[in-house]
Structures are given as C-alpha cells and as structure tokens.
Image 1 (cartoon, protein in one colour):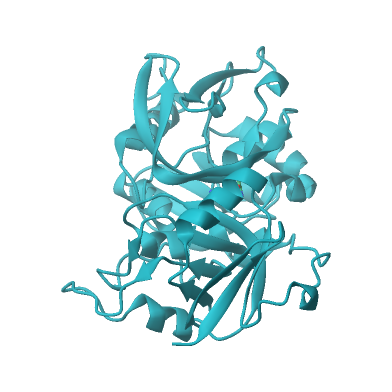
Image 2 (tube, rainbow, N blue to C red; image 1 turned 90 degrees about the vertical axis):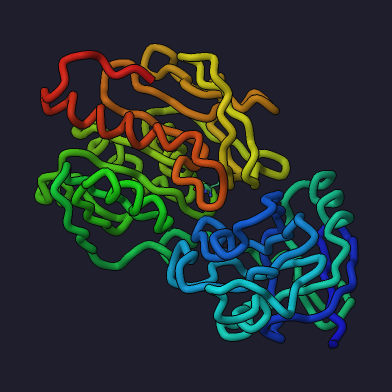
Length: 362
Ligand SMILES: NC(=O)CC[C@H](N)C(=O)O
C-alpha cells in the first residue's frame, strides 16, 4: 500500500494510503455525513471540483452497481475514506470503489483520520486541499484559483427528450441528478433536459407546461449572465427550483446568497415547513444559502427553514407559481419525506392550466 497525503490550505497534514488514480489534485474540501449512498454522492454533479470526506467510517461494503449512478461518471475531484472496503458483498455489485476510482481516474486516500479532517474543516471552513504523494506544502501553488466554470462542464450540450403522457417539463440542467428526472417521469411528465444557457425564447419554442431548475456545482454568483433569462423563464411558467436552482431563482429576483462555513451535506438535515409547522428530514448538499434578510417579503414567502441553523430552505412566490427548495426532495441518497414537493409541483401545473380550482398550499 502506497502512502499518500492530504494537505489543507490551513496548514494541516494527514497521512493515508493511496486508492484510485495515482495523480495529485487540488479541490475544495467538503464532508458528507450520510451513512449510505456513496455511489450516488460520488456521481452527483454538484460535487464537481470538490474533494469529499466521507464521515461514515466504512465505505464500499456493498460495492458499485449499475443502477445507483446519479450521472454518467464520478464527478468529485477526489475522495477521502476512513476504512475503504476491498471485498464488497452485494448481489448487484460489479466492482470495488477502489477499482471504480482507478477506472475513472479519480484519486483518493483511505485510512485517513476522517474525524480529524472534519474537525479541521468545521473550524476553518471549506478550503483548498490537495491529495498528493508528497507532504511538502511548499511544492504547492496555493494561490492557484479553483475552477469557476463547473456548471458549463457538467451541463448537457444538447436537448434530451424523455417522453411521457403528462405535463411537459423543461428541466434546465446545471448538473441535474438522474433521480430528479426520474421523479418527474414517475409523475408521468414528458421532460426535455436543456443546457443551462437556454434563452427564454428557446424555452417558449418547446411549449412547456412548466420548468424545473436543477441542482449544480459551484457558487451561484458565477452564473450572473443567465439571471435575466431565468427571470423571464420563471415568470412565464410554473417553476420548481432545487438547490442551485433555488439559489439562482432567488438571485434573479433580487435576493442575495452567502456561503456557509462548511455547508450542509448529509441525509438527515431537519427542515421546518412554515405552512404546517412539520419537520421533515432531508437530504442536502450545499455551501451557499439565500440570505434571509435579502428576501423581499412582498414577493416571496419563506416556505422552509433549516432547524439546525435557521437558514432559508425554500421560497414560495406570493403571486406567481414559483416554488423553490434548498434541500433535495429526490433524495438519492436520503429519506424521501419531501417527495411531496414533486406532488405539489404537479398540482401547481394542473392549477395553472385551470385543471384544479382550489389554491395550492405549500
Ligand atoms: N446541490 C446543489 O445544487 C449545490 C448548490 C451550490 N453549488 C452550493 O453548494 O450551494
């Protein structure tokens, strides 16, 4: 087993053993507390550019299968494990996580003290980190900027159509997860997945009944060029925004976003639904949040709050059929408590077509 190192911008050094690709990489270090679902996490495009610390101490025990990818390949820049299982046991498993990382040329480290890494990230916040064969900090160019074009790297280049007999939803792809598409298809929708650069006129030409803005990597403020089009598109159709989609809608309507110290990543984040006072357990993966004070309360109601830190978890437009959530109702991995968000979206679409005459409650 070859030694390898994790070097943090804050100056801390951790030793582990190399797994996956033998290359060195720099990325933004984050951590995820989910106990299961590593395959979905590794393929979620929202993690592009990031080095993931898996908090759960045993990863890889059910291997890698042909079903659980959320995108075509591993999206994260690197992965850190405490104990990485080399002999998985599951009837669907076709390879080990180590083999998968090697095939997809993603470097990783195992036998890392992930608890100490998480403590460092909780203290200093998400920061640059490097996976390397060398413990030498001076060999690294720490001023090198992290990539800012992550959405253009993961978004589709051409429209993709999935037939259905229900409403036609245009899914704007900032790095969508397969489970989001599946949630719409399960509702019977026809879905057209489109590039994130789509213009309002192009959306109109597709004659949709509704639009959905997906999750995606990076800082939503990197996408200021598309804010105007987002405003035009979302004011014309019933809209659901998820995670990055939620942040982009908020920004397009004049709210502000900020960055959390170390983000919310895991499968047990409690959110309170304002309308019902119910608490739902949600799957989350984000660094950025919509700043509460910046939300124009005449335009938007805050529909969900995070129970742990009080941050904004959802918005509901007061006059237009626009709903957004910061958490992941498609829940892969994670609990599907909030699958109702998709049901409410369907109801909102029907209502806008005059098919139901009672008000949609959130
Ligand atoms: N899952 C997401 O869509 C993440 C949104 C954004 N990249 C963030 O980190 O806040």
